[in-house]
Amino acid sequence: MSQIFEDWTKPYRVRCSDVGLRCNCVIFGMSEKKVMDESIVHMFEYHAIDPREMTSEMKSRIKQNIKESSVTVRVQHTLPKLF
Ligand SMILES: [Zn+2]
Image (cartoon, rainbow, N blue to C red; front, side, top):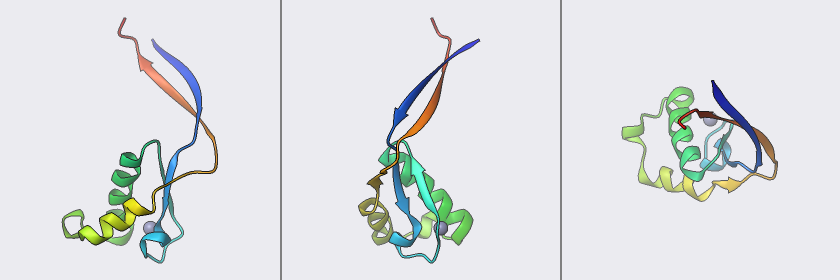
């Protein structure tokens, strides 16, 4: 059994188009780091940009465009029962 609780939060997001790609994707994440990680995966899967070939300029452009989302979402956390 695990415990589930709900929370309302504002995720962070970055638009692919803000990074300079012709893409309508918006990448959401619960933290700036998560958005960064998800973006790198997205760049690789959708734009065939190898993370090792990604320039530091592109990375900083992603970082600069990570904004707090204006929407509030409900998230469910599942906690493993440790106690
Ligand atoms: Zn994209």
